[in-house]
Length: 321
Ligand SMILES: Nc1nc2c(ncn2[C@@H]2O[C@H](COP(=O)(O)OP(=O)(O)OP(=O)(O)O)[C@@H](O)[C@H]2O)c(=O)[nH]1
Ligand SMILES: [Mg+2]
Image (tube, rainbow, N blue to C red; front, side, top):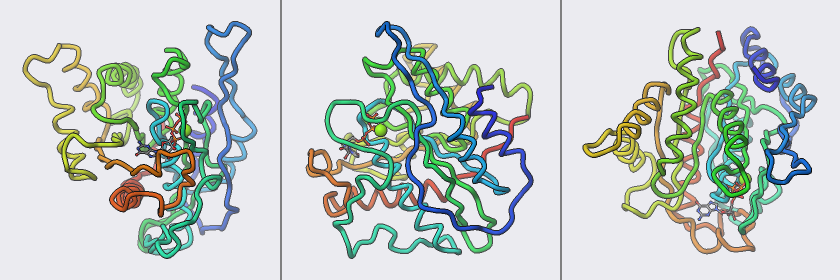
């Protein structure tokens, strides 16, 4: 078990809640670096920022912890979406009944979001390096009746690009899967077989791990599909149709493809998809500041709904046996 896992799992083993306390705003902070060695073609070295991680875990206190992680190919809006999830969690922290109201601040559509969350940027160059987390948990209540929950948010380097080799990719996806109680897999269009293969490999490890405790190894898988224009149906409703078709074994499919799909279904307690519409020209321009005023209204509405739906279903990370 890595130190990162140990840190989070030992926090998970603590007793249950107390009163909510207010914490400073926080910022994105790197917890795992991938350093290039002298041989540029060799794998980069993994370096865990232990101190940062310890500080972070110490802020969780006695609350149950949920961990939202986003992963997937590079340059597909992962950090941008997490920035809005952070904005929503910050608003939720300010309420006690799970209703964050107009948290996107529709009366002020020009609020710049660049610099207020995880770094997002246009262009071809990779932006997120290694693994980042918000420097503190968000202590939220999903409704008046529910007890507070500490939510950790984690952003990861893009995978499946020419700069991330297989070993690095496995480290990022493996850690993301193991640590998350909600794993968002972010991609555009239809999910390709390479991705399914990679996920399925981890499901096999998961099956071995799950022999030591009851239930499925992984909790929630959310496929977040950007720029969906294959059909007109978007959001969670569109996502349901997508996931049904995507995970079904079809006549003519290779044995491996069918097996991979079964592994995903067998190892996650819950899986879902959300289809995002195109964001509009300004969002993909160099000048994009992240404000809602620059987004196409339909896209803006889906960013809001996605964040709200995701957090509504987020569950505490189950303890490891
Ligand atoms: N086409 C498209 N672009 C988007 C969408 N959401 C955000 N973007 C833009 O995509 C660009 C890249 O966003 P990032 O959040 O930095 O992407 P990333 O996946 O985190 O990139 P890496 O960290 O390099 O892996 C930004 O300019 C965003 O404004 C979307 O749904 N579709
Ligand atoms: Mg990023």
